[in-house]
Amino acid sequence: MHSSGLKDGKQGYVDSVKTGVVVYQSSKRQINTVVQLGEQAFLARGEVVMDAVIRGTQKRLQSLFSVTWRQEQEAWRLVAHQTTLLPL
Image (cartoon, rainbow, N blue to C red; front, top):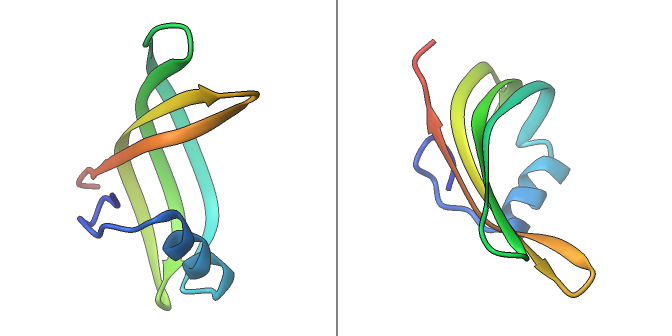
């Protein structure tokens, strides 16, 4: 889920970056909290500031985020991602 409320899957997101619909110029993140969820999962929360060109418009995005990762076999997989846009 994007901070704009747009629901997107992995392929849609990757396609938007590959085709230049979204061009990230910089990204600075800070992880504020990490919570272990058993032996094979964790939740991380923090803040991110990104500069991007989205559909030809320059934007600065400041958001809170929450991500959940789970270990599956030998790899860590992102299973949930949520961002909330903050006013600048």
